[in-house]
Length: 131
Image (cartoon, rainbow, N blue to C red; front, top):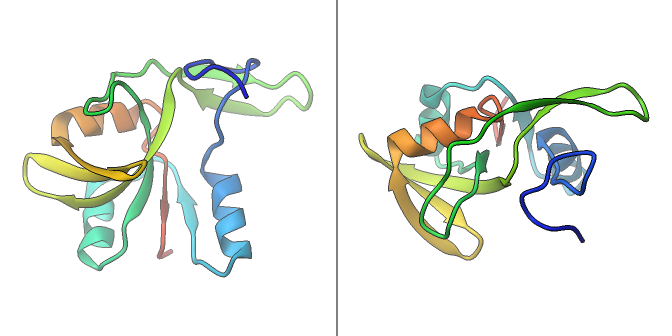
């Protein structure tokens, strides 16, 4: 296990597609997305389905503004966007100015503007329960 905050080729996290594949293998509907808009996330939550999102983690109650970097894997030439301190949270609720996420085992309320900025670093990557 590596140190949190690294980017490839060092130890790094995992993006939406492999997670969605595994969730589907367990019989859970999971649709990986990039370039997702906030209205789609709100509609999913309003329909009763939380959304897994990729953000850039900071301290327990805050996010940081990530700097996206392009990475090309030497082994297969695959291109991806990465950012230091990649982290996932599950969005469970929102208001006009705040978003509630499940971060580990705790619910945390964050500024909507800060969440949207942090979420954008990895191109608004998420997993939805509906296509």
